[in-house]
Image (cartoon, rainbow over all chains, first blue to last red):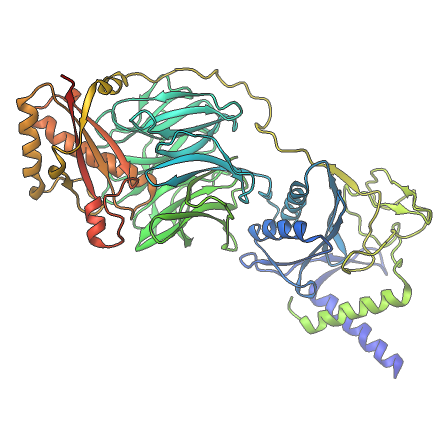
Length: 392
Length: 243
């Protein structure tokens, strides 16, 4: 009886191994088990977290949910996260009885150690960097005015970067994240400012008559794209990073808005009304090569953001409410993602930060894992946050 | 997982096997799947850690023959996991931006020009009441000045034509139903559209300035068609010379 049960168990074990794994023969009589995960990448990855104090576990859970995981009990998990924390964080990521991650982290505060571990986990699972140690700019708006802030991607470490008590708009990073650019109305006109991130020193780089909007530095840090209406309608201009050598790039009566650079700093994608409804166009920084970007399935398209890997353009479409979309950078069929607006790509080209609205005047920020469509709100202590710009 | 029942059986089998044979069934030089770059630590009974140097084969050549030390995990977890010393320890430094060496061009007043005329306005009086009744209303997502609104424009034109010392700011506003920067641009287009009419009527281009407020300054904070319609507007600010 006992022998039969053991046999049955062993057979069952061998059987289930066969289902979940592939076998490969190495040397005669020796089996190497290849771990193959059968998991639909469009579904959240079930993962468990054990062994950490609550403060660490909470940070890990948030980071991993943003990375497209779903926290489940251990027996339902494909990956298991475990470890301990005693000033030094020891972390393991288990996949069956293998350890894609087995590392200890020290030399920073617990939150940051947890973020470092989460990034290693995200890389092991997704084969794409995590975003747990990144930062972003945003605008906090109160009635009639606003200020620019920076924060960690998870809403911690919020710091003001302006204190003008006037209207601000469209913050953007520039020159390897050493500067921020934005529009401010502090001198009774929407003017473009460049501000050194470290020192807070700033200069006006565009104060032309009319409005000076949406400054966007090129990824290589040499040029600046802006929307200026000095010629009589808002059009795309490109200058040097300090505002010199200004050139008008588009001459469209119907007006343009929201430029975004290709990662190689050669092209600018923007929204234009020249064809009727708001559509995406792209043009080279020298003013030539203008093309419409086909967006099959989206009627109007605004606020584009070009992914750092160059492959996709994220944007907002509006039909009733707002919907986040992506389209291949060369144009084509649009994929609608989730409700929301004004997307900003993470450096990993996988996660998006975007804006949601409560009622009509209250904005807040949220994170989207594009492959799984999993959404996680950014817990910001400030109300009314919008216009995110993710540092790359 | 496709076969949860069998999976449970497998886990049970493993647990049973490990319980029966003890935690140290896997010897580093035999059964541990090599993880590139990870040092598997050995703890001897005195608690000394023998740190194995980077071993590309992962076979633990320096091992004293024991399996990986396991002190068990807090809160219970899978047994048999290597713990303790000998792990790769990664110093995680605090974030400092920027990334890498960068020599950007020095900041300076590289390109902004003009603006002088905006500064000169501080010598003039801002009058927001004289033309309050002449606010131009716009249709949804439109910057066209409709025929019903033209009569309001005509009044403004007449007054500016008669008194050459007067200047004007046209403010463009939107309802909140578009995205923020799109609305900022739309507000500017509305202001430009009004300005175009003024210039066509003979008012000098340097006498009319445009400014957009997008959706930042609604006239009506309501959430209905009437409120939105009221917010889609071009407002006039008259600038009078100080006497």
